[in-house]
Image (cartoon, rainbow, N blue to C red; front, side, top):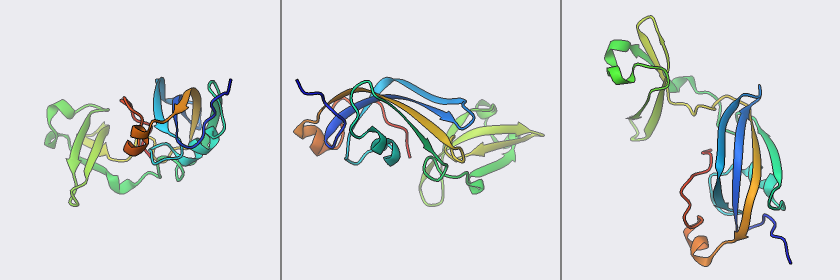
Length: 164
């Protein structure tokens, strides 16, 4: 009996947590997400390399600097306006909205501060500027089908990997 190992063109299913460098839990995905190893996907390359050659049940831990992970915090993506210019349903910390910039790019904005009648929204990724640690567990490995290889993603893949 051969044991499947993580390698190119295998469908790899993982669960993971992301902690900041202070140890605070930032994200937890305990339902397996799948990707095709060695192909184009959204998994960070450092995490993919750490998984290479591992078997089901293996755990890896990968630390990513802001530059390697979710990017540095870009102050130009933070906007402050008078709270009265914002719809009431968005006047709380954590509220999310989408806006289109001059280039036609859609930005996801999150309300991060309300102070002195001013409301601040931030279009940076919530983990931008943070050193993060991915703790990843391999839950399943199998050969990708020809259809999956052509599509570039596993069949029935309904959950995405963390966006780079």
